[in-house]
Amino acid sequence: MARKKKTPAKPAPKTVKLDAVVPPPVVTPLAAPTKTATISTPADKVPAGEVVKKAELIDRAVEMSGLKKRDVKPSVEAAMAVLSEALIKGEELNLPPLGKLRVVKSKDVNDGAKVLTLKLRTMKDSAGKGGKADMDPPKTAPTKTAPTIKLEATKPAPVKKPV
Image 1: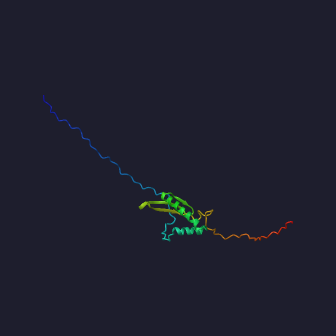
Image 2: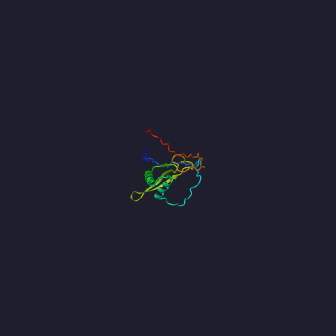
Image 3: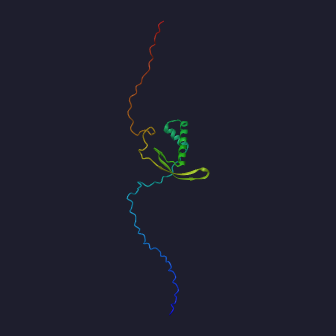
C-alpha cells in the first residue's frame, strides 16, 4: 500500500484591514439670509473738541440751573462718583436725554486704575424732552400775559377812642 504523503498544515488566513470608502461630502452653499442689517449712515470721524474739565462742568450746571455754585458743586461731584462706580462695575446706564451708555472693553492698568472703552447710543431728537427735568425753555413764541393790576395800600382812617 502506498503511503500518502503528509502535506504540511495550511496557516490560518491573515486578516486584511481595508480602509472604509467614504464618498466625498456634498457641499451646498447656504441660502443668503433674507434679512440683513443696514446702517443708515456710516460713523463719522469726529474731530477732537475742547476738553471740558470738572470746574467748567460745574460752571455750566450753575448757569443752567440758576443755583449757587456752593449748592451745585456737591451734587455734580456726587453724580460723577455714582456714574464712575456704575461704569467700573460694568453696569449699563440709561440716562435720558444723554442716552444709553455701556462698557465695551475694560483693561486694568497700574495701581488699580482702569481704562474703559464705552459705547454711547444717543437718544432721538424728541426723546427725553419735556417734563420737570427739562431745563431748556420752550422754543415757541411767548404767550400773552394778563395785564398786571397795581394796588396801592391806603392807611385806614384813625379810629377815635372815647375819652
